[in-house]
Image (cartoon, rainbow, N blue to C red):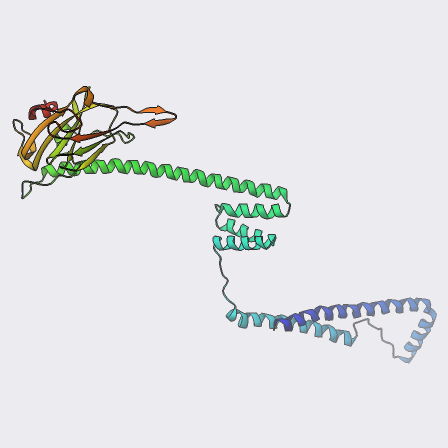
Length: 370
């Protein structure tokens, strides 16, 4: 059907041109007749005179001949018929059978551009790359694809222009990702602080709940005496740490005491025969006090104090404050690197650990409450 339409569309201009040539030929002949009339004016006058005498004279009007009119009307009619036929064909036939236009994504246009680029059909490749940019202006590889096409065609100015756009696009993406990463880091730090505050509130709430049973289990790292010593001191930027190995059959509550103020900054529980690492310790010089025992009971009172929460048997208190047992936590820089202090401690209630212990009373253990 398309070939038929093309055939008729080819014929129509031929008919029109042919008709115009015929009309042109007619007017040329008419001009020749006028020239002849001028040359033989006397003969024409005699001829006209004779016609007037006979009464058969009529002034001739120079109009198109009948066959030219028919040819012109036929050409116009054929042209209109083909146009109407083409219109109805597209409306009733192609509108129902025409497949819907497929809309490609930016990724699909980019893949098409790469395919045409490999085939060295650079004009088609550039069309697809430009379509990618119209869909997603931040699709940096599309700028690079266009610049490479122009480079292959030795069009240096356009190559430099799109290569510069590619460089600007990648720089903007990198800056955006860095800003996003910094934002996520800040959100993580904020969440960490909120989680620590929530954890402290949860621990505080444990002391205000009335249990059906008077005992409950602690887990490593719990701080049962925050209500007495205050909330633990943390430095989220610090990598100072002390690793504890509780080498005895008794549980322990380890207190980290700052030498300069004699105040406990951390109190943390370590179950018997387990290990625990105390982290994020602020800079400073510290010593240890340890409360050993078994059978934690939150309702028991410490002897000679009004403090609630204690072990119910195998109780002892120790202190590790000799010069050799002090923890000097100081960060220092060497070879453009920052180093932090790390200590390892083995706990025993009396003397078998790696530190020199001294027995103390419960009052001395809680002395910074006074």
